[in-house]
Amino acid sequence: MRDITADWAFARYEAIRPRAPAATFSASSRRAAHLGEVAEQVDAFILDAFGVLNRGETAIPGAIDRMRELRDQGKRLIVLTNAASYTKAEAVEKYARLGFDFSAKEVISSRDVAFALLPPLPDGTIWAAAAAPEDRFDDSPVPLRRVQDDPRLFDSAGGFVLLSSTGWADAENERLIKALRDDPRPLIVANPDLVAPREDGLTLEPGHFAEAIAEATGLAPRFFGKPHRNAFDAALARLRGIPRSRIAMVGDTLHTDVLGGAAAGLKTVLITDHGLFRGRDVGPYITRSGIVPDWIVPTT
Image (tube, rainbow, N blue to C red; front, top):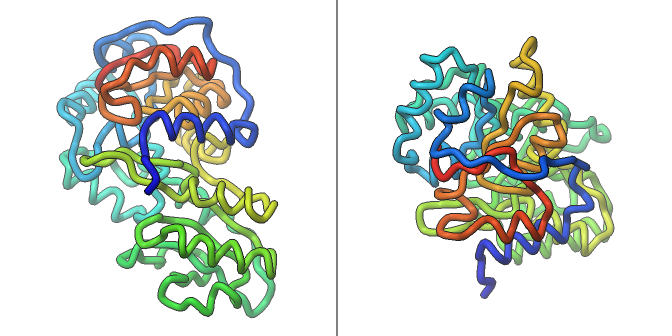
């Protein structure tokens, strides 16, 4: 049984780092108690969701009030999440259920980015998705079917999209590896995260399974979402007119949020108390990786 810990995830992120964008970082980090103490330095915040706004289905204490405080100060807010299982409407409804007031224009998921940029497939073929049983695809611009519902799609689909790891484990991944060895086809990864913080610990995410596929087949998946530039381009399109030096990417991971934000030319904030590094001293991880956030903040 795999022991899914922050140390394991950090080591895996370091191992796949050559596939991440190149970035430069500050020489050192400043400390702040919360995002309110960073607000004077920036005009807009791009916010990761898991570990920043919520942990699983629970809002992080104080995050709802902090978002209201930042709005009252005139700060622009964008949620940029790698959670790819929800449609836009479902994502907005989820945040509202948790107590946030984000509009549809303020929420961008890696799913949105991937669906907007899906390449065409050969005539007569469709995309097959690794997805949760309850996932809907009415927002997809092309026909899309859940591969777990029809295993024949492992052989007949024109390409594959990894949206969710719910209901997807090593057995399913091994079957996809065999199918792609026998017949190489496009693999789209709409959630590059290796792990995600939940109420009861870390869960494996689509990025983990995609990396295993890449290593086993030699295929090069196409990644949509942080830390890749396509996600940040989508967020920055909503913040035109604001200099990148006045925009902060806020997240709980070094290799997706901080590295991706720095590669996009943004300021970066690492939240430490609710996500990947919960209960740990982040200093050794920063030193080992060389990924240095502009601010280290315990809570949103």
